[in-house]
Structure formats: structure tokens, C-alpha cells
Length: 340
Image 1: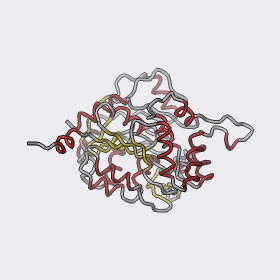
Image 2: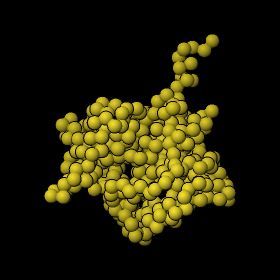
Image 3: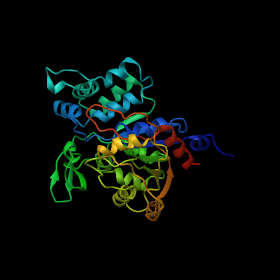
Image 4: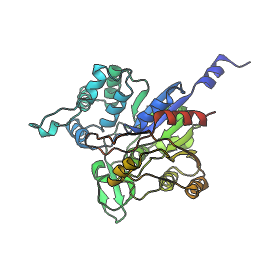
């Protein structure tokens, strides 16, 4: 007769999403109806304008993607504290604070008060009560760097994703650093681990660079899934196909680690909208059957569907380049089906 403990273990479904502030949130939001617990492991190497100021101010890892994830997954996204985390100062008279997200300053202050970046994130979590656990992939304050195809280097995340430069050959950390132990524990205990979607080099790859993350993915019994972006991204994946994304990950993780790739093949996107994104350098990935076969030949199962959200108008977001996002419900359904 099956013990109560065994029954509990079989009924538990745990998902871990690894990436940046938007992609991980999309995955978790879609997965929550099907999984008993979800954890977002969030990159910490961003040096964008608001986040970069907070990092310099408090000598901390990047708070911005963590702040955005916490606010997006808040129990009540319209509650005062959740909205306050996302509020940006309008301060032309003090340019350094113009556009600053209040949540970044809050996390910076808490980190200085407690002397512990992870504790600062934990306290912020108690304020907004996210519906999933949100953890930094590391508590180390280090910079993301890149070697480019011409042999030159870029030495912080903002420069790594800069436009009009040679292709990225590899990314690395300026100072090698360990992953946050609870993040590694979450990977080990998961039923499914999802990489992406999001900025390929500056969010997904950046999270994989911390010591222990790749080893944890190699050792976990969880299914490891990659959600490939819907488009290229200017300054990072110009000219990439879906197969190029998958091949880079397989090369970094080692053979047999990446199990499945969710590949978008959209049929109903408005052509004028697609053209608007393309004008900004974000070109829709349109893999044909031959490319899908190439992905399968890497030992990765391609799950090809229309995962894109249906947009009417192109979004304009503060100081960031938006893209055609994945529909959380479609992602959640596909991830649940993979475990059946």
C-alpha cells in the first residue's frame, strides 16, 4: 500500500523558471494552474539605467529584474505596495533619479540595512506576497562581460547588449561567483526546469554562468526545457535562427541535459505589427521543418506550436526594447502536458 508520504510526493509538481524579469514571470503565471509550487530564479547582472544606479549606490547585484518579478507575481498586482515597487520617479531636475524605479531603491536600502542582498529580497517578498517563490540566482555583485567575434571585449551588461557591434562569441563573469545555494536546491528538487524566454545572453546565459548552476542542471532529475524566443534581439542574437539558440545552449550545458525546446511557429500575427518589430531589428523566427529536424538531431525534442500572445498594437516600454511575448496560458499548458 502506498504511504501518505509517497502519495504526497507523486501529487507534488514543482516548476523552476530561470531567466530575467519578464520571461520567468510569464512562465510562472502560465504554470501556476498546473503546478503545486513554482520558483523564479532571476538574473542579477543587469546594469541598465535605473538598476545600474541602484547597484552603484548600494554596491549590490542587480535588483531590477527581481523587483519586476516580485511585482508581477504579487498576490494583488493592483495593491499599493506592488504598484509602488514599479513606480518610476519623474525628476528632470535630478537626472540620476529620473526614471528610477522605487523598488530598486527599496531593495538597495534593505540590502544596506541588513548587509544581506538575499534578505533584502526576502523582506520585499513579504511586502507584496508573491504567488511564487522569487530568488536571486546569486547574491554576488559581479559584472557580465562578453568576447565578440572580432576578439574585442565588452565589460558590463549594458555594453554586452549594445547595438552595432560584432556578434557575441561568448559571455562570462568579470569575477567568477557562486550561485545562491537555495537556488541550486530548487533546481535539484524540481520536476521541470524552464530556461527562458528572455534576453538570450544577458538573462538566460547570464544566469547559467554562476558556479553550480550548470552542474545542478546536469544532475537534476527534472525535465529541462528551453523556451526559445519568438524573435531575434538587437545587439544579442542578430541573424540567429531557432537552431542557433538551441545549439548554443546544448554546447554550454553539455549533451543530454536539455530535454525539450518549445519553438514558436506563429500563424495569426498581424503582418504590419511584425513589420514594426522588424524595423527595430527584432525579426520573427520562422523555423521550417528542416530546421526543426536539426534541433531534434541535437538530442532535443522540439515542441512546435503557436505560443505567441495576440497583440493589437506594439507596446512602448520605458528604456527597453519590447518584443512579441509568449502567451502565459499557452506556455503553461505545454509545460503541464510535458509531464503527463
